[in-house]
Structure formats: structure tokens, C-alpha cells
Length: 433
Image (cartoon, rainbow, N blue to C red; front, side, top):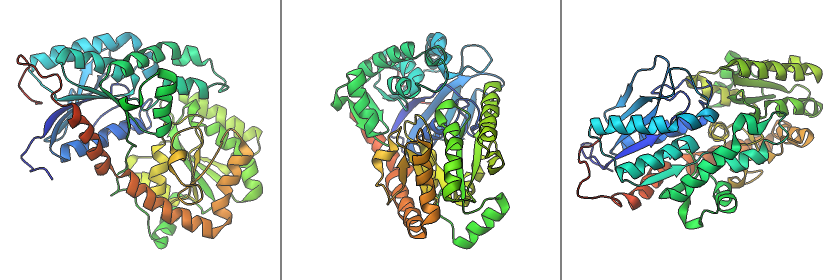
């Protein structure tokens, strides 16, 4: 382990959309699993002896800096005005971000060893920053435009107009071709990078996301009973948490409820769905009408936003956790639920189902097929032996495979392969402030 006074390197992390901060406002637009991912990774880098600037967009009344610890700060660069900008609309503003960041970094005489960008918007900008600063660029896509475009077909919206897939995929292609290396979070992502974007296999390394293994743990049965009493859960409740986004498949889960109740008559849904915009609230109202049309609205509880500190207990309280997305690059919430000992059913429209052993760690099904998905949700409720196996082995699997410190060490080992690759005699020498 690094000496506490030793600095092993200076890292620049870019995650420029959403509400990134020392205490992120989870549930707000574009603020969910990716923000948690980047923040937890940055914290582990700092703990392991690296100086880290996590750079994001400044808007509204946000401060310029959040100092998280002596080795880590969130640094907000203003661009694109003072209002929130959804990630699909970042295209027009990325050049301004690059210009503004580089001007400020040069003014402060900052020097980094590696830039690690997250999502296509930061990737496009990160490549230009890396070229200007002559440092390596390692990109983590989180989500792939080509895959999302395929899986969003039939979602009932004009996908090209809303998501601007053609522009996004073009920017992704150029980023993937020009960066030094890509970190895929699933094997499926790595395969699609080769198939859809023509990226060589040796240009991609698969490193999965991680969880906070100190927070997300199972609880003793008596404690679970207390949590259920406090939160109003029962052993036949299905819990789902996520943003009010079409790809999260909340409507698909509601559509599965009638079939689920035929198998488990007391089954209910507990939906922690964040609705931070007018469009989000419109979707929630549409989903409530769907529940009414299907005759199950009184068996659906809309919990709204759940504070981050309450998340572990909400996972523990559920009889089953559902990841029901139409499209999900990974599914951090499912891993957190498994780590808490809750039997979990994940979507087949994402990479996580390929990492688990069906019937041992978790179950999976197609949420676009309501009867199929309902059957999997019912299994742990109907068969105690299966429930106990999923609870025990799911938690072990999540902890072994997805602890954040181990994930950070694997990522740093990759960075070290490229550190110093572009060093020259005229490079700036000062380190992160």
C-alpha cells in the first residue's frame, strides 16, 4: 500500500453531464449510476495515493470546487450557459468546454499523467484535451450509441430526434479510434465495440463497475423485519429504483404485474422513481395510467426519490429486486441489491446477465415479455430454498467481483501502462492543485 505522504500520480477524470458533486443529487436528470461510478472510483484512486481532479460542468449556483479530501476535488468548469443541459444536447457545447478547461488548466499550470473520460460527451472532449496536453487518454463509454439505438426501437418515441444517435455514434467512433485505450464495463460492450465500431480487441479491456462493500451488506432477519415495518414493505414486494427514463422499463415492470399477481396474489411493486423534470413527471403519470388500465394501480406504490443513505435498507426490505430495463449497459443497482442479500431478477438487454450464473447468483428474463419476466420475479417468492440460495450466493458474488477497491487497482494498473507515453522536455511540471 502506498505511503500516505506519497503521490503516485496526477489523474484527470472527466464526467461532464448531470449533477456531479461531493454529495451528488441522485435522481435528478442524467444523475444516477454513472455519477456514483465515477465518484467512487475517484475516491479509491485518492485513497491509493493519487491526486485526482474530477472535472464536470458548472451551471446554476454550483460552487467552482468541492474538496472531498486532500487528494480529491470536484472542479466545475462553466460552459453552455447557466441552465441544465441534458446529455443528448451536449454536442454544441463541447468545444467551449475544451477551450475553457484548457485555458484554466494552463493558467493554473496544472499537469496530469492520464485523462480518464466517462461517456461519449466527455470522451470527445477528453481526446482533444489529451492531445493538447500530450497525455494518454483512457475512455470509459458506460453506454454505446449503436446498442442503445437498437434497443430503444419500439419505445414509443422518435429516438433519432430525441437522442441524436447519428451524431453521437460518429463522435463515439472518432473517440474510440483515437484514444489510447477503452475500458468496457461488460463483455457485451467489448464485443459491440468490435462489431459496430471496428475497434480491435487489444484496444479494449473489460473492467466492471464496483460497489461500496461497506454499505451494501446483508442484514440479520430480525433487522430486515424492522426495516420492512419502518418502510412499509412486505416479503412479496418487488422493488425497482431508477430515473424516470424510457429505457429503464418501468412500464414493462407494471405490465408484468398482472401475471405476477396470478402467481403470487399478494405481490406489489415498490417503485423509487426519481422525476426531476416536467417530462419525467409526465412519464410517471403515463405509467400510473397504465397501472390503472391494467387494474393494478392499487398494488403499485410510488416512492419517488430515495435518499442515498436510505438505499441499502430499501434493497434489504424487498422480497425481490427488479432490473427491468429495455437497455442497461451494466446495472449497478442490481449489484447493490444482490450485495444486500436480496434475490434479484435482471434484464437480458444488458451485460450483467452474462456475468452471473442463473439460479445461483441471480435470475434473468426479458422484461419485454411480461409473462416471462413475471415468472422469474415469482420464483424466489414461491420457493424458499431458491430465495435463500440467491440471497447468500448473490451477496458473495457481488462482494467478490465488484468491490470498489479491487476495481480501482485494476484500473490504475491500466493507467500505469500509458503513463509518460507522451512526455516531452517542454511539458509543464506542476501537479494537481
